[in-house]
Length: 162
Image (cartoon, rainbow, N blue to C red; front, side):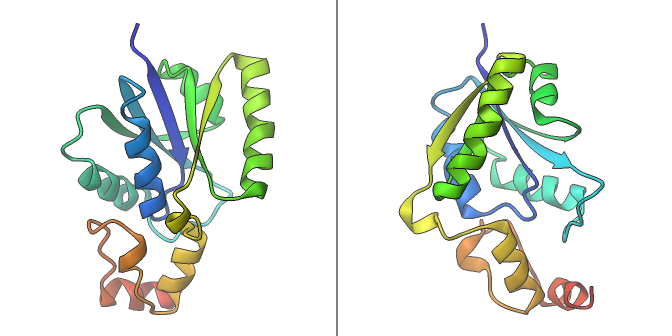
């Protein structure tokens, strides 16, 4: 039976921390689905298609990866694609407490296990929230995002007006 894992997130934008976790999960699973969660109550900096396009470019040479957009409960989506595992990255203690609670509910209610990876120390300060703030304030995010994520001056100017 094929072992499928879901790596969910908003990826607004995808960071080097996300890429590291995904690459470390690849040897463990037959397929990793990168699920871009869509939440109508949340405001995003980049649209879904842009985020999906960036992720597909980053992993264009990786046949074990599929990129999809989904709505609703992550655990339900996981089951709908046959993923019995959810992959998450941990940067710090608050991340652990948050992920632990969700993982316990997902296991108890739906039988879905969560596989947790600790972030590499050099990548632990990186978060999409901080990256978005840097972008909005005309900073250089190149060291924190994959090369495929191109934040041009034009994009920065458009975003700084939001």
